[in-house]
Length: 427
Image: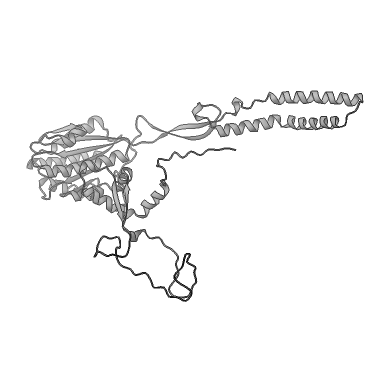
């Protein structure tokens, strides 16, 4: 029976998905190092593009069987016109290039360059965010609009034409025709053989002539009956059946709080933006249903759009508690802690109005940390000021609070991975 197999995998011509995935798994450590180096040298706008990975030649060797040293063996080299039995052949002289690009120039020798291949954007981001997850995420409550997943559930006798399974339908039609016409065909073959025998042995006997006429009439009736069996009947049609089942979903919201006061110079703002860019890419890649709330603050806090959060130029003094109070108000208005998994991420240089830092610690202790699954604070300055001291008092008593420093661009990625690593994973 004729069958067709259609390959709809998202791969170009002459590309093997399986081989590429095995290759990426084998050289995972080198690929991870290349991604880490790429992150350190890129701007936030170029973070999502792919990367070229260089694998040294020595790491591409495969185990193989070969002859050991010593012993005698005979072999035939095709096209030999220089040597005869008993001649000694010198080993090829080494030297020259080894593919590393170092050493003195030579007029002899050969070698291989390092193997270079390109990671696609999807592969780059997969390596970039592996072993990361939102800490303490639980299914607090199913979302009001449930997610539905469609999956195969056998075959049915009704459906739309695009779900028609042609092979199974034709197989059913063939079985039905065999079942309905099997006995009639056997009788038809028997009667045709009888007619052929009577015609091969003609006779004027009236009984023989009557039998021949009756047999031919019976053959005509059987052929008419078989002709009435349809080639394809509606009961033969089989359609692919799919059912929709609800998929439990978690409702989560991430609050992004960034200090844009006058003490935050361009370098510190760049570090903060790098951290939030990583967080934004991570959340939107791994979680389909998650709300993002962007809050900028100086002496006053304001909920802004994504574009304003990363590109607005407004600045001023520093009152950190304004952002925490606004976050508390938004939670009370829109995000019930019994229904939502609430997360917070704050980036600041630690400079704050002296009398306000105690207020920040009180807001976190009394309102925000009891409602949040996890709250992360990143300081983009080395000096530890009053805000760092107040926050440091929370780390011992609150397991869902973490704080780190990142004063250089190269530290953003390790700090980010340390804050959002999966439980049991190495940062």
